[in-house]
Length: 288
Image (cartoon, rainbow, N blue to C red; front, side, top):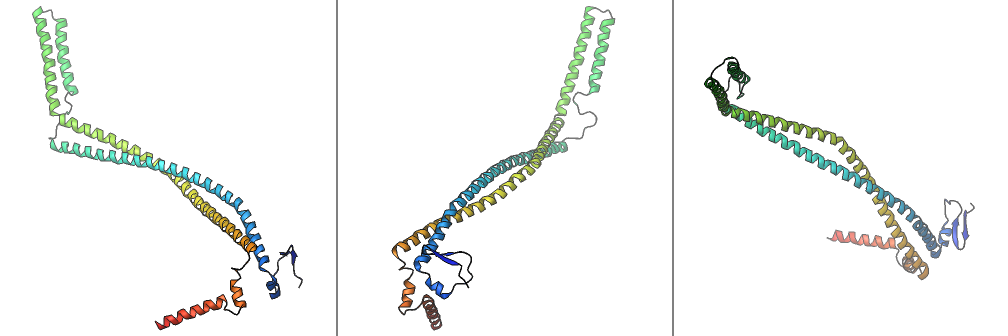
């Protein structure tokens, strides 16, 4: 079979793809040739990494910015929801307290029959009818100056009596009015609580959108960060590898050839030494 490998400037160049290498070909490869081949591969790899690293860094920057923005928006909505939830719960708690207070008043006062308004319409109508009658008497009856004064005093007396009667009823129905005020305040608080709850429901969908966006881009950020880290590590390892093989080519392969020299001089191979150590450990374990 004709070899598809040719030598150029001391390097073995592969024209195609070789399926096999003979032992003679393997033994013909010198440390210098192998070192140069590895160094060439390291240099080519190191030259390709920066472009990939820049691309991954751009992805990382973009994903981090989007994730940060989505998180900020999500947290802002969460704070609004938290505030609305507190407003709703506080309003409900206050309304409940007012309803309980109103019920306590209702249970403590005797049940009233008829009007509960201190100044009912029928009382105002009755007063007005009496005043109209006295006024008509003044207009139609020609009396003395004393008679007119008497009629006016009677009108004043009717108004004063009505006001005193209304004042007495106000005191009587003060607790009832207080109860009604408490109930009205409680109803207004429940309306406030309902509005806060409806606002929370509307914010829920918006919050879910921002949350999903944050999770998606945070995953992208983590992947980009991991790829960036791996590329940075690979670039560092490649550079250290380049430095190592340059040093070997300039100063020799004594450190790498130490095992081969030992075997050539009749010593044990690395594999044989490892097997011997394993046997010694097993024997020591049996003795224990």
